[in-house]
Length: 125
Image (cartoon, rainbow, N blue to C red; front, side):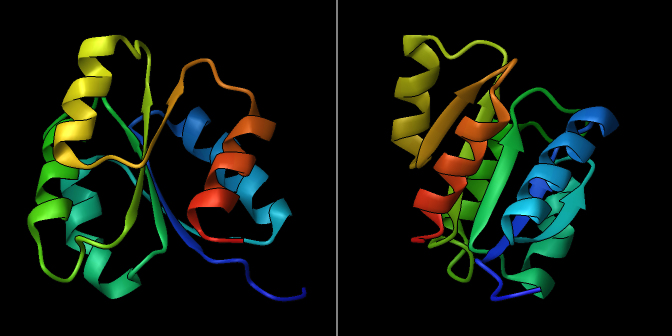
């Protein structure tokens, strides 16, 4: 199995995308846990303490923006690297993300190789 590159929490309400990201990161050597929306992410994050969280922006219950804000404002979670996956990475979105403290963006549909590269960089590998 080799060394685990880091822990990633994949947050997306779309099961197909969750699977796609999970499979790609597993193959790369990451330990992956998934959550179905922002609330699910916040419920699990302290147990998992991931190095990186991939966050879909458009989700029911709690969207990616709100989730990112809550993660950033929590003392125990403020250091976790956040990768926002959005269908529209316009300048407004990027500005909003910067003000929250999001570390990176990917626009859907994304290239799995690019996703892996970004997660590796964020995990510090």
